[in-house]
Image (cartoon, rainbow, N blue to C red; front, top):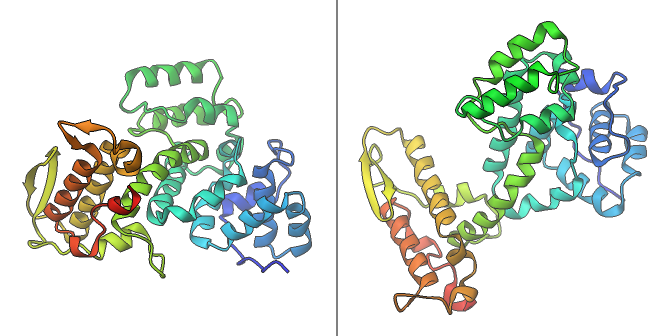
Length: 323
């Protein structure tokens, strides 16, 4: 018998959308099934919840229940229920990719950013959220109008010709455009989340080798931050070129710890092929030395420079065993 998921609480905006007839439902897609299951679960309507779950194949039903039993993920994702257009193309098949990453903090940060950006663009207006369609999201996701002049001009033209926010009441559109043009980061969506997850997965496979999963299965942030003991907590080294650092003084301890952690990820991104595929790279020579060993040696040096306790880390990525 399936275990009963934790009863979830959804936002007022999401409740407004789900408890009213809505013209932007998406049939029996994964998105609509997920939205309805969450709504009926929040209302403790078990029969209606079961009806919608029954529309799923067994594999997706299992992934859905595993996801809903991790409330920290579900609550972050469920905030987005109020914005209908974000959900086009959503697939429950992606859920099984989350847990192996051990990147709970990073995943929650991304989902929270989606909500904050769109909540700001729409000024928290429930009507505007409900009226923002999938076409609008597709045109805006990945744009950065606050930095890119060409993105800003494109968005102005799209607004003028009614391509975006066409269902949002006209009086609200000028203010939406004004806020939209101030966005100085890539506009995120559920689609960009799962696309960017592909890059996170590969980089995580390298960072995970520094801190293999133990019985407690801690997140990478928890595992690595617990091994970092700065010699001078108020001082931080920042790598501004490969193997070269500059010193930043008077850094708050928590901020310094996060900066050290992020620098490990940046190194993994720069040296990804050598860190994740040593057996393939074993035959690749770089000035007579194996490039993967060089990269892991540099990774170890970086860990030491940033005050991570390398005695507790697998600083060669288990290279000898893998090769």
